[in-house]
Length: 140
Image (cartoon, rainbow, N blue to C red):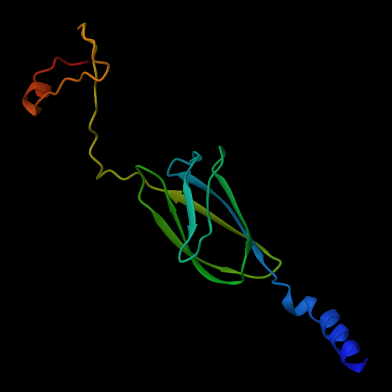
C-alpha cells in the first residue's frame, strides 16, 4: 500500500517537471524596399524547425525549446541572412529580416516559340545550339 501511495505521489508531482516549457518565434521578412517577401524560408539552424512566410511576409514558429539559435532566412534572388536569437520559455520573441537582392545572379531569359509542325510523336522536341539562340530575333 505504501508503494502504491509513493507511486501516486511521484506521478502527481511529475507533470511540472515533465512538461517542456516552450517559446514562440514570430517576425516578418521584407526586401530592402520594405515590401513583404511571401514564401521566404525561415529555418532554425540545426533543428527540424522551419516555416515559409505568409502573403504579408510574416512567420511564426511555435513550441520552440528554450535556447540560443541561429535563424536563417532565404529567398530566391536574395542574399540569405542569419541572426542569432535567444528563445525563453513562455515568451514570444520577435525578429525582423530585411533581405537584399543578390545582384550576382545572372538574368537568363528562357524563351520558347511555337512553330507549326505535324508529328504523331507527342514527345517531339527541337534542340537549339547556343549560336542558334543568339541569332533569334529580339522578343522571341
